[in-house]
Image 1 (cartoon, rainbow, N blue to C red):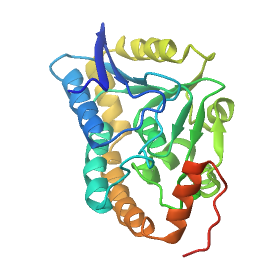
Image 2 (image 1 turned 45 degrees about the vertical axis):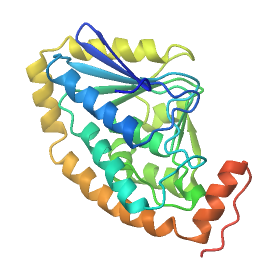
Image 3 (image 1 turned 90 degrees about the horizontal axis):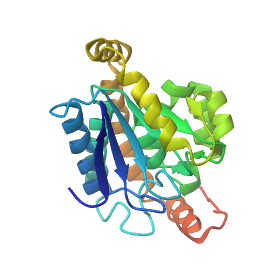
Length: 255
């Protein structure tokens, strides 16, 4: 396991921390480490709940398009990345995400893979895919409508509008809203509330509530991979990504 992921245990709560500040971009290696660590926590180490958090200003900004991005073979890269992401949806214990700063693109997908999200007024949830000229990914086609409903998900995706903490709470995207700087502590406390319950019963209830969900996410990811691969080859995607890196407004031509 790399130094980019920290693993600790607080009683019956496991804490997984991204350590790539300030934006905490992920790649295949980091997601694989994350999924491996989560599986170990819920198994041999007997944790009853997991907190997913990150070091630095932002929760997670997804893939770093200013770096290697998805590489020369997007389909293969995305397939491998989403296979690790699917493992997060497949965990047997509840996960609480401590979302400070921004959860952008794939980072929003990571946050939505958790059962619950704790946020602050300054938190920003951003489905920025349309502004990049690409299709949404990381299972958001299934997770976002499940969390906030089809209409709310469509608005977030079509407009690429940033959603602040208070609006996220109203939508149900954030489950608890706390003061800035208190997000991680509140997430750990929330996880301890869950862990205080009978572990076999909690796992059983969660399995019932999420019946078929992993299969739904898997199917969504298959379409997401195909559409992201197709759209990444377009001029609009090139323009959107370039504008994002330059912090300018994109000009799309539909080509």
